[in-house]
Image (tube, rainbow, N blue to C red; front, side, top):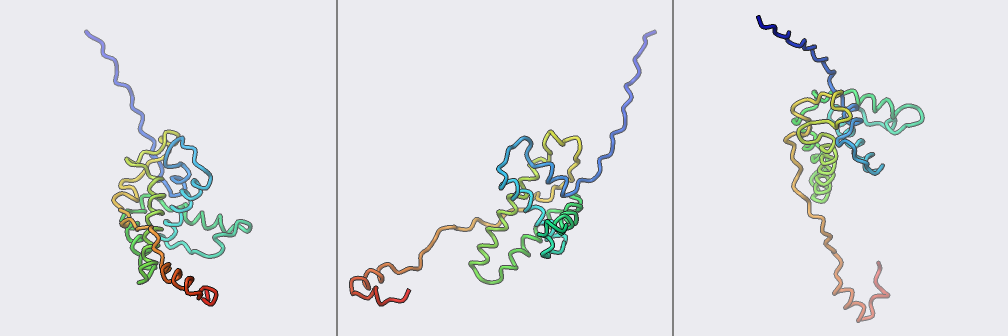
Length: 185
């Protein structure tokens, strides 16, 4: 008779708690990168602002109160939101609402599109393609599917060229005619 070894006992996987916005942002979007402090500040602040807008967290002056705890209260209200309850559809609605705030002024619309694109780019960087967290936290975080920014496209690129409205030919003509000293700037 041939002896067989018993099957190894598989221990059940420990269920991971849902990931909150604060946990994901603190874990970083890219493992091992050394970011400039200002860059890191922007890349952690902007996703929180977006989450606050989406979940209607009050945006009061207390949000900036580092001394009396207002900042910590605001962060607690933002960081507690679970990523699983933060969908690409909500991000898309936020993007369109952000654009509507600009009104009908073409310059303000272009500015809003540029700002929204920058915010989305920074937010997406915290959620790398494939949804894999960095190795340092891979065992601790279970990211939802779909990720909050999956399928959310940026607005079309805005032209950033400066177009002067100064009539240089008129200024030269006036200068030659001796009118420059009399012109009111």
